Image (cartoon, rainbow, N blue to C red; front, side):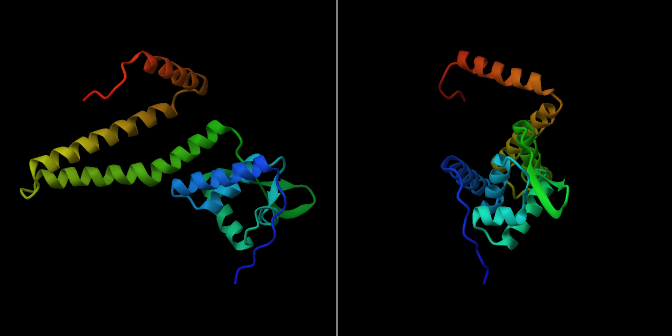
Length: 185
């Protein structure tokens, strides 16, 4: 049986953020514990050991260890040495633009890239298959075209310097306010 320690008391706002971050991660298909640990480290004022994390969140040490491995693989946290302490300490990337970029890159790799490969194969296979209706073939091509457009846009945004990206986002807000509302087909 896994032992869970009693939680250390956190300020209410910090606890609310950690719980919300865990819920958001769960909605995105990320383990809730992984997201909660990331939320804790994101707000932490100093690097924390796995034991500190387990005690603070009331999680099993094994759960914390596995979650740390996943966060390290995403590049969302890093090990930091502490003079005089042989234990591993961890801190989160705190530049929110970097956090967003790493999450987007991970999601693209895990979701968009496989979707593109599958759609390309389906469109190719459908082209030579008389059993595939013209409508199904058309919809597969449309989905592929859309997914390729999103992929190209993502790749373009990677090369835009941050100040220009911020300006682009703000400009997009202004442009959208001039567009007519309602759905256009």
